[in-house]
Length: 359
Ligand code: AMP
Ligand code: MG
Image (tube, rainbow, N blue to C red; front, side, top):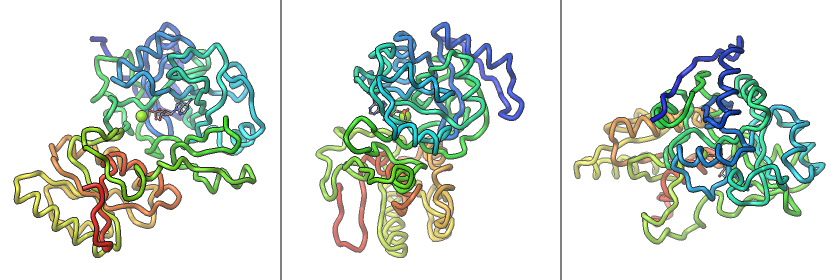
């Protein structure tokens, strides 16, 4: 067990002493969790293989799942990449610092441990003064996946990090709530055309506007494949998963609320503890052990901000069964829906189509 120091840092009045200490921990091979605008990151020196190994161990993450390298100055990208495509420059100018990760060809200084053995590297410049100051204090290159235990929802508060990683890392910098609440958009720039590997706050439209050409989307983004049931629940890769069995219900609002309530009633009668994740507009329709509104229908960014904390709150209350309304699939709603489906292991019921998928 390591003793984990928790330090509160104000992003307007950066405590240089604490940041220098945190930077030193990283330089000497230790781990520090820190706030970013997306979610909290678990940082280690990206150029030391031992640091990356420690990150995997602390999270319990499979070591073939690569880490994102965080930088604090555009110029620093040259050292860790083999070539810098013009499109990377354009995207950085438009969106960095910000919630966009780019996949590029990696240079030899980046150890295979950091990239999960790949010849490419994921790079991002976060839009948070504490994160930027920490990266600078650490020497410029901080590998950081989300600071949760593997399989748990990503942390949007320092309390979530402490819940998962206390005793496993040297320090947590507490900078308050993450303002976006979902992980960065990942775009692969190593192929002929740019491809979105993970949706986030920066949407496909925004990328296409800057690049002036079509941007692809990985086919599996919004499901295992429409209409195809996963073979066995245990075989599904549940990435962002609450402890309770989760189902997303899509369709017209009235049908959705009716279906969720009917299923919730059945489960409660069977002795399950049921949680419902909905919008403020529909909250009053439901009766269950816990009913939580993630936000309003009009502002899906609000749902993005609250989603992971609500999933964790279901865990804390030992909810065994969760039903969630679906989101629009437009703009940030697409990222919310992508994370919901992952949390649910792609278990979705489509009302009004007379069929149930993946049940
Ligand atoms: P996390 O930081 O926990 O959100 O996880 C980082 C994400 O970036 C994971 O989904 C990785 O699979 C992805 N990633 C990191 N590096 C690469 C890479 N070189 N190529 C493709 N995906 C990557
Ligand atoms: Mg993660």
